[in-house]
Length: 125
Image 1 (tube, helix red, strand yellow):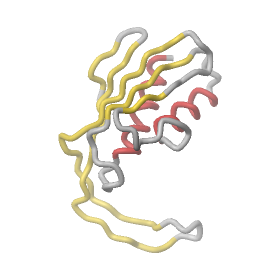
Image 2 (spheres, rainbow, N blue to C red):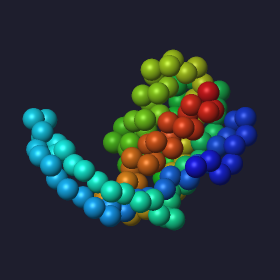
Image 3 (cartoon, rainbow, N blue to C red):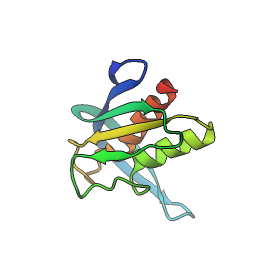
Image 4 (cartoon, one colour):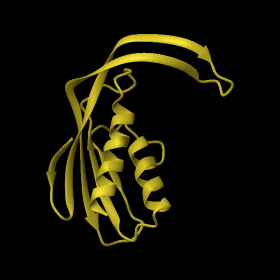
C-alpha cells in the first residue's frame, strides 16, 4: 500500500499476515512443501522508503536493526536488483527498510517487503 508518492520518492506499507489455516499437502522434489493456506492481513506493517538517485545501478539498502542484512541476503535487495537488472534501469535508488514485523515469525515480513520493493521500483522508474 502506497503511503506517499512523488516523482522521486515513495513510502510504502508492507502488511503482515497471519495464517488462519495451514495444511501441508506434500513434500516436493525440490525439498519445499506444497501447502494450502488461509491467510489474513493484519494492521502490522514494515515501511519501505525509496528515493530515486542519479547513480546508475546503485541501490544501497539501510535497515533499522543491525541483525537484518542489508545486502544480497535481504529479499528487498534481491527484488530491487532483479527488477532493475531485468529491465536495465539506468538510475539508482536509495532504500530504507523500517522493520516492525517480527523476523522469521511466519508473518510474511520478508516477502511482503520484497513485493513492496517491486511496486516501488516499478512506479519510480
